[in-house]
Structure formats: structure tokens, C-alpha cells
Picture (cartoon, rainbow, N blue to C red):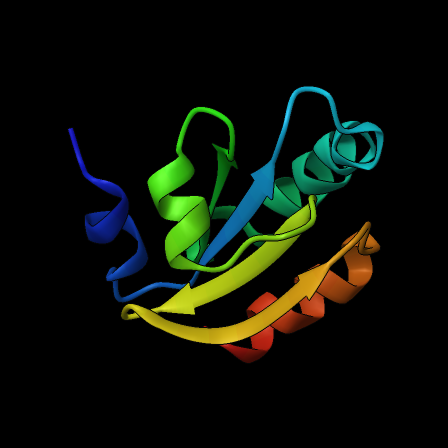
Length: 98
């Protein structure tokens, strides 16, 4: 099984959705990310990280509000934003970083 570090250090972009079960806006992101995933195919990965279950990762990246999305490429943060983000914005962003 790959570790979080393995995933974000991949050659292709990885969009990480830091979220929580109790977060309303996080629930709104789920169908948006599904749309993004179907549009980008294998060009990038999308992973969801529950901040309550993965506090070390949340602390490492200073996650203070959820949802927070971070786009990594080869371990480097390329983009970061909190809140609900429209699918078309995320698709453009990912395609720009492939």
C-alpha cells in the first residue's frame, strides 16, 4: 500500500481534498470531485484525507478549515485553496499542471 508521501511525490499531479465527516461544504465537494475525476481520467489522482483520522497530515500542511484542496506534483505544492471550488476551475488547474 502506498503512503501519503508516496502518493504526493508521484510524477503526475495529485489533488488532495482535506475534509471531515461533520463538514457540510465537504459533502458538497464529493460530487464535484467525481465530475473532475471523470474529466481528467488518468492524468492526475484525487485523494480524500479525513483530517480527524489523519491529524498528522492535517498538521503538517496547516489545515485550519475544511474543505482545503491542495494540488501536489512531485511532492511540491502547486496550488492550495479552502472552500468549495467549481469542477471546471479544478479541471483547468489540473490540466495546467500535468
